Each structure stands twice: as structure tokens, then as C-alpha cells.
Image 1 (cartoon, helix red, strand yellow):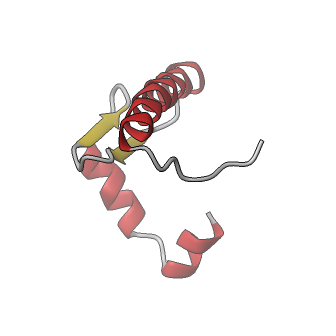
Image 2: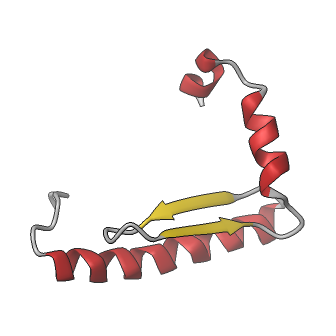
Image 3: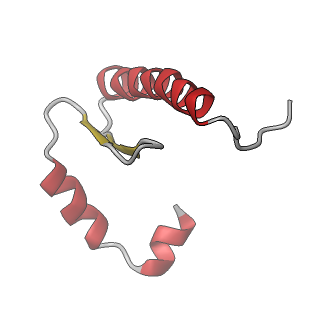
Length: 77
């Protein structure tokens, strides 16, 4: 299966919506089952943002932790 950009805007938005729901579900499962910190940020084809932060997590603490990594560490991860 070759993955490529969908040219039709309506088809692209529908696919985004379905895939977003699946990815959010997986993020919630990871957060609960593995007790990992999860933060997901999406921007839809129409430009609307969606943010998910797992249970018992705060976005500010996640961003603070990320800011402590060097550029090289970000590339490695």
C-alpha cells in the first residue's frame, strides 16, 4: 500500500478524523496500561488544533521536561 497525500479535501478531512480517533485511543491506552506520559497535538486540514494530555499529566510539566533536552537528544529520540 502506497501512502500518499489525498487530493480531495473532503476525503482528506474524513480520513484525518478517523485516524485521529484511532491515534487518540492508542494514546489513552498507552497512558493507562503502561503508565507513560502522553501528549498528542494535532492540527486538522482545516487548521483546528486538537490536544490530548494523558491522565495525571500536565502539559506544562511535559514541555518543561522536553525543554531540558539538547537538540542532539531530541534528534536521537
